[in-house]
Amino acid sequence: MCRNIHTLHNFDPPATGDEVYAAALQYVRKVAGTTRPSRANQEAFDEAVDAIAHATQHLLEHLTTTAPPKNREEEAAKARARAASRYPVSA
Image (cartoon, rainbow, N blue to C red; front, side, top):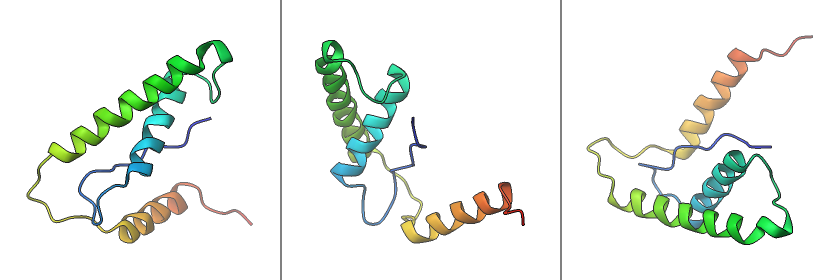
C-alpha cells in the first residue's frame, strides 16, 4: 500500500512540489489505512493531503543546515547497495 517516504531535506536541487505532494499522499494513505478513500471520505482525505503537503513545504523552506547538499543519484546508489546487501538475489 505505501512505499517508503524519502528524505526531502538538503538535496540539490531542492525537493519539488510533486515530491512534497507524493510524500504527503503516502503519509495520509498510511495513516488512513487505505490507498483510496470512500466517496464519503474523499474530501477529508484530499484536505489532509493538501494540509500536510503545505506544512511539509513550509518545514523544508525553513530548515537550515551547515551540511553540504546531498546528491540524489549518490543517495539512490547507496540505497540500492543497502537493499542488495539486505535482500541478496538467490540463484
